[in-house]
Image 1 (cartoon, rainbow, N blue to C red):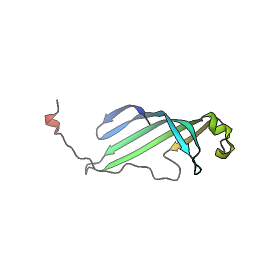
Image 2 (image 1 turned 30 degrees about the vertical axis):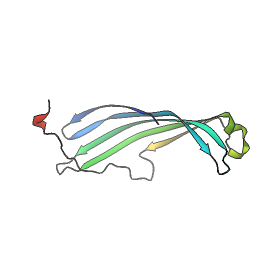
Image 3 (image 1 turned 90 degrees about the horizontal axis):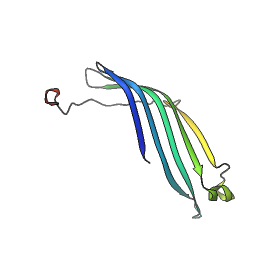
Length: 121
């Protein structure tokens, strides 16, 4: 699925803070059931959230994010006409919270500098 994103933010000391928008799709998928029958669907999504990443003196990273995501599935006519697929509507929409409820959602890692600040252009 093709992804596009835009981050607008600032770096203040050891903190990167800003707003992240990511769009995925449209992407065409084919779904085949156990009987070998298939239908098509076009998927896309959009997420929109605030993020903060803090680099600690020991190289560890702390991450926090807050926002929302939405997806759209658009089914082809075969999916709607064939009762076997049990598709009720041409367009199905849904959403999720960022971070997802009940899920610990974080970036874990350690910063490793690979290019010396003195060697940067």
